[in-house]
Length: 459
Ligand SMILES: C[S@@+](CC[C@H](N)C(=O)[O-])C[C@H]1O[C@@H](n2cnc3c(N)ncnc32)[C@H](O)[C@@H]1O
Image 1 (cartoon, rainbow, N blue to C red):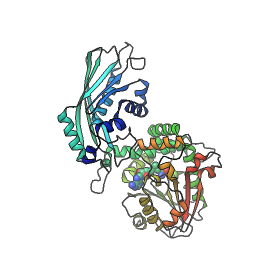
Image 2: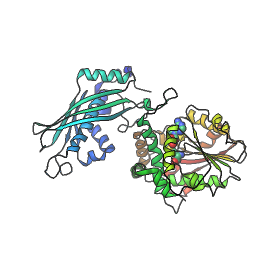
Image 3: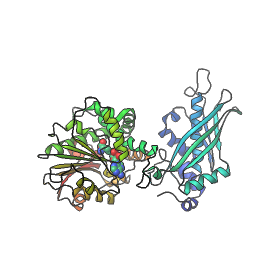
Image 4: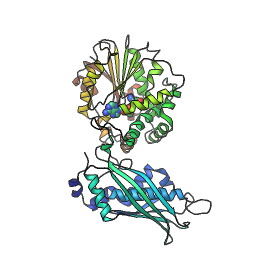
């Protein structure tokens, strides 16, 4: 839900300042999100509605061989000074990548272009100031709150020792994050949405790429290729927040592999939200050559195709890509009408790393529809589910809370958790469901692993 013009006017500037944009909060959030800002001790000095002043100190990290500021750091400072001035105009709106938020209520802000004129060397701390005129501010608010994309050029002036040392014109666009999502009516996809979609799939591949191979069999060259430097970076970042993460992903990989192996005469594997899962290449032979159905959004399948086309030593496997949006497509119909899918064959449906991103009702619908495609008594569905306290932030395990916040900042908010996955599966039409916590699966003493469970259900 986009914050409306009405809701916006209900929030006072004082409230907004205290909870969303005051200098100490913004300095902390931006230091967390953009480590180079922390490294240089860049900070926000003053924020008013429509203006922002920041400081880039003269110190070892910020200067060049002449002891004056690195030009590129002035540009970086301009980016966040102008961006924050722009953010002050949209009362109550969290900014994706900075504030904890989700795509339903946040704004996406992006620097589209900049023009910086360096006038003279800066030999003191540099303050950067962006002041937005009333006219421009009105245009920004009107466009944003009526759901239109904002494209605006803002001035940033740099001063050092009372002298103007640089001037910049920064061109931003801003719009409600939810509008970046493709819809049936407007399938043309925004590059920012594509970027976000790829990020979480790459991050999971990044965690698999460096998992302990003595614990789970992985083809790490493939995983590393799928993750790319972006996935490896994100994996490292989130792993540093929640050190249990990599072992958790390795555990789920192994549990799924074991589930697949346990199905007698397995002929079909459906990977729901396949992302960059390289399992088909790793397990095709050992599973007796089943057909893999890889279901995901068309934009993700495009990325999957690109990644797979570049894999070296790729075995030939039977794979079918199936484009679907879990939120609005009839998954049962899509699978049952697929010319190569046969519901009577022993089949495994893998719903891995997905349930937490859909609402309870969406999960119920997705799982119920998927259940309708399983008509062989040996067929099984696998899912992972977190406990509700992970989602509402009451786990008492600081690392889990920090990880969920980190996912939220990536725009991948967890919204579903379940205390009783077995009953949930029965409500979705399955007749039996086995549940195990990762703590029990790993035979670990660490209760942090108990917040995450695997469920395997059959009809
Ligand atoms: C966290 S990734 C998990 C990927 C893969 N299962 C794995 O474990 O490596 C979630 C996947 O769900 C897909 N996804 C997200 N929203 C979707 C939707 N509405 N319909 C279909 N797939 C979706 C994403 O494209 C992504 O590939």
